[in-house]
Image (cartoon, rainbow, N blue to C red; front, top):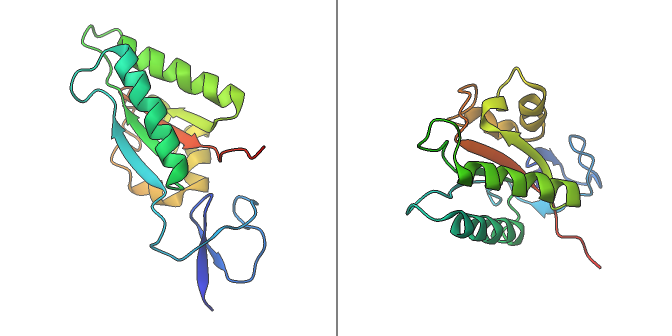
Length: 154
């Protein structure tokens, strides 16, 4: 039987279904290999200011929606002070705010991106391909994963 990919979670589903059996969303039809659901974004590249990093974050989130990407791994670093940097904190605050407003479906901090933690497990259930992620089970506080929400019509 021919299969298609769910545009929300990326799992392969049988042709003819109206809803994805994994994430229960209405199916957008993509062929396997046609959809790249994950992107790594280095927000600290070029040693930006906090404002520049947040601008890049906003731009990458919009681009992810346009490209039908569902998960961004955001590299923000931990900060040179050893106590957590300003970019890290501001990026995480912005993502939590966007999650509250509905622009982000889920936020998983790098230290929680694990097969053992609730948020990490939930993300892996929806996006099994992330089991190949370099930072899985590493407790990396210098990254955050964001599940991008669809643009709301109206």
